[in-house]
Image 1 (cartoon, rainbow, N blue to C red):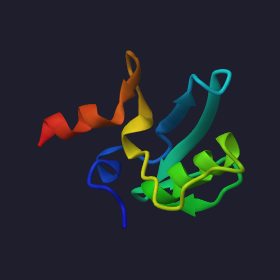
Image 2: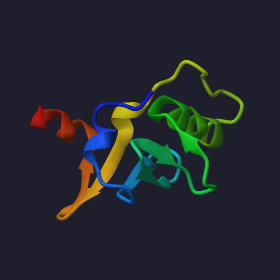
Image 3: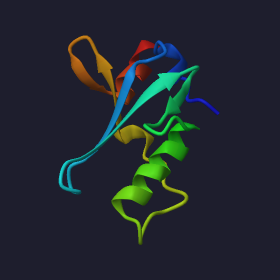
Image 4: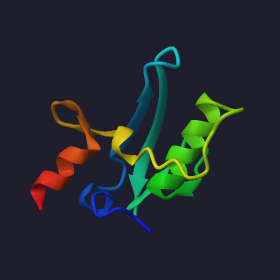
Length: 90
């Protein structure tokens, strides 16, 4: 299920997940039809994409229940914005 914030973004909008504790790890994806499309072209829900990032960052300790949605950013005209900033438009 798509988060209500994703359909607000046009297709092709850049999404970023940064994990500064993991040597500045950056995971870039895009929005398509209200879903997250990862670099491999797989369409994921926000929580599913966050779990994939968690598997990359902590392969031996990742958590299937970890949401991580609030750690995503979207690319706005002025640069990267927290995904939570979209909730302010409701």
